[in-house]
Image 1 (spheres, rainbow, N blue to C red):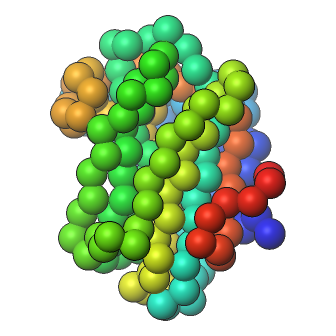
Image 2: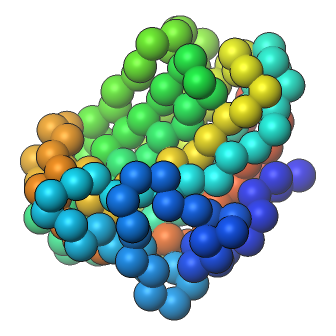
Image 3: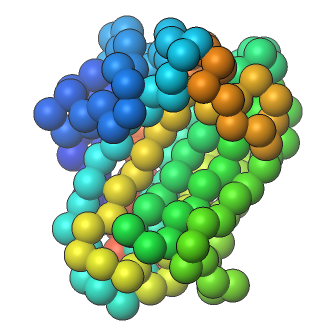
Length: 168
């Protein structure tokens, strides 16, 4: 089952607190980075079982904005799986931090009006795992920049103990 609390309401700072900077929230689904001086992102943390597989699935609306590229991360304190997405074309730039293994997966596919982003860590290393959403991680796909600003519209989020996502 979905472990995300308020999986369709990203305005709730109790469940989706700021991690870096202050993300501007408009309504329940729109997230904006309005600081050209620092990165801004939100997160939701989960209690996880060390050694178990977990999957985060996030749906972000397609749009024509190619001036900012959002970033979606699954992080367990050791392994960082992240992907920057062009919300117009679906092109991606993936990055994996320390601890990432070949069994971990990143997938971005079209799901009608949204891009469906799936991040799976095959065996989490700790008892706390986070989903991190940065509305504007860069102005060039694949290059992080604190100067990036802009907005995204999320549709929903899912986090579950499983090797892959299921029907939301």
